[in-house]
Image 1 (spheres, rainbow, N blue to C red):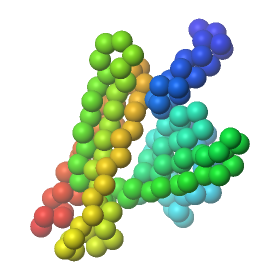
Image 2 (image 1 turned 60 degrees about the horizontal axis):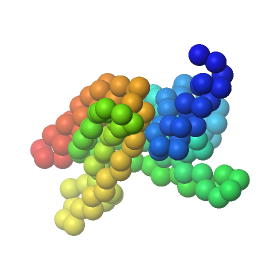
Image 3 (image 1 turned 45 degrees about the vertical axis):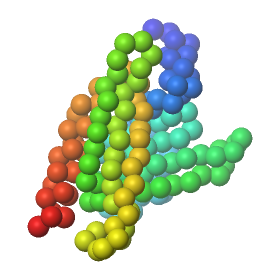
Image 4 (image 1 turned 180 degrees about the horizontal axis):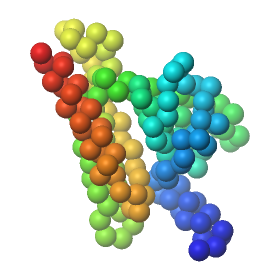
Length: 149
């Protein structure tokens, strides 16, 4: 496969809204300044200018904005706040795979009036989301058990 095929594939995936897996080392170089002391990147994905990084403490979402991408929004979802995960695998044609994460936004997770949110991430058909789903589902299950003690 030539360079143009690789570039063309990533551009098409970007247009479709699908992320491609990027090495932790490359993500560390570009986004390391946003990590907390002692936090380590487990895996990460990139969509043209935007990125999603999973560390040992949280999921970071980087949303570069504007024509130059100089402006950027960074959002965090703490791993201990995730209580549910759903997955949709790719089908026939140009379908993609999706992971949706359900999490608690309220700082006090056992308080009355808990606020919930969800976030959907799309992945290219060629990326097998099963191991990522399994890791997040096990995490969600443990969190769910701890919240309901």
